[in-house]
Length: 471
Image 1: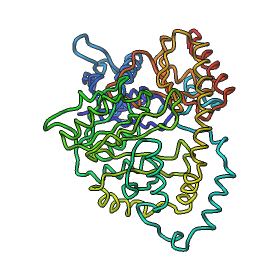
Image 2: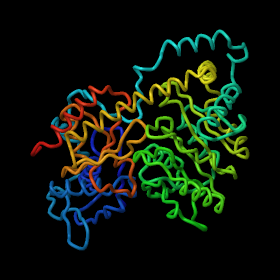
Image 3: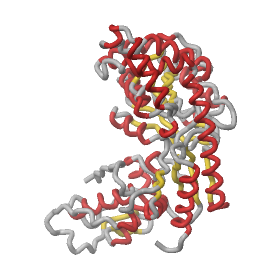
Image 4: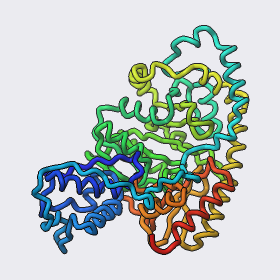
């Protein structure tokens, strides 16, 4: 019988422990009998969309507890000596949480990625914009608005992306959405029926899960410092009809796709009649130079769908995003969107349009770029001070997070557990990985919402937790 496992990435329990407990419960329930060969680690990792090291850690835990045994050259098997293996099936509850691993303590410093400095958002100015929008709104704008978004906001967004991303478009190609995730979901529905999608490896877990919800086979394409390895995308009859890419600030690595790779991807898409979904994540917050030109700005054949949002530049609760769509796709997209949300709230659209027209939006973005640059420096300085040559940081030139690689002799699960033990939360890379395996154990550390003092204190606590001897 094929091993069936379900992972809950919202739980605190590390993925490796969830896998180990799932296999253990299957043994107790007699779904796996003594002598059964477990899937190879790479195969199970691919099936569960996790790093191979996560499965290796799960197998090591099972072996240490006596549930499985390794046979040289043959694989990993359910132990033949399990005396209770013939007992009636029963559901075994997880043992009580070990507070030294899963930290019942309150988290005092949370290096959560993607969260802006909400305490610095100009609430009074936004409240004024909302009040003005309500005062100036025409009666018709208080009813059901156009499914594609208000013409005024679509116009100013078209002007904004032309000015900042080198992407001149007709406003009619801009569609207002409830954030970037809805835009991606709507595009996958618009492009249906499709059977597969190529995505970057590593890439956001939300993209993996959305692909699964759409029953798509995933082609995991490695990335390096130049961006997605376009030369590794399948060609011919096996070519994927859709490619999802984050070219300006790849998540979680932070790398930017080179111009050569961008042109290579566009040429590939044209040869294979494919659509490219460009997620312009974090492009506004680049510290060393201007953001690279949008991939869609190089697309003369209208094969790129450009997706953006205001969750990072303003605040996530605003739930306003947009996509810029090739003309041939707009009709079907709007038909689907009509039954998804009918329309995006009008007052927020009007307030945002006012901000974009007045320059308040870009003024706020410039201010926050300076704040995030200072907080990034505080994090890099603290990591260098406490870990020296044992730390390697990627993705520092842009955004509100960095990928931190650590040569400390600890695996990802141990890094996370020890951090929680001292009241600090860092984020695992493994949920982002399909085949990708970092050379060193890695974690994602966001800094946008943390003060310099919180950052320094958090890294100091991590140093105490990660460099101490023993558990």
